[in-house]
Image (cartoon, rainbow, N blue to C red; front, side, top):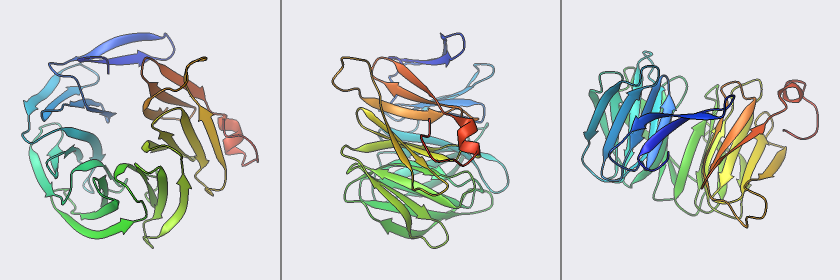
Length: 284
């Protein structure tokens, strides 16, 4: 995101192409399943087909800031767009027709949500120290809250599922990252950072990594097979005291990881051959 533009960056040619020209400065964005979706501070929502650049939706939803956006498939295989708003709701839309499928009424503003790979569970974090877990209906139009999990001591900032859906990780403002087992609903692993942790992602197998980023300077990579090995990468330019990290993302094949900074994007290569051979040593 740059101002009121969303730019696609080609890592091979190192060229940027504008994919969305907006009338607002985005506060949230996701690129998933062929769609580019941007949200704004006054409930703006803009949805574009990635392949054609066609705008299929551009409206105000009502409410407040769109904190986060997520696209996933329900149990029937249909795409759903989840919009986390600061008005204590998650609005669920069907793609591509953008029909409102459900509105989940929450007790706090939700900062991030993620649907499990099988479409059965929705994990959410927001302006308290809980992870809220919902059971989803087959068609993704009903959501029953089944559990409230607590390990952090500050607001939740991000949540992500591993590719198999057997566990999910939640990051919080106090720097805690907790990995939860879905079946037992108990922590499998916990990691602490010195600064707020606001972004985390799992890579796809067989690379099997969990990455999480502090608000500034550091990205951490954890072996998601055992959660026993942990490597820290210091990001930013030489001579710069600190760099704000806006987000992180793996390549689909897990070969690289991007880090979004204040004025640039950093790219790191992962030694995928080493990851597949189960050795000891560095992760990248």
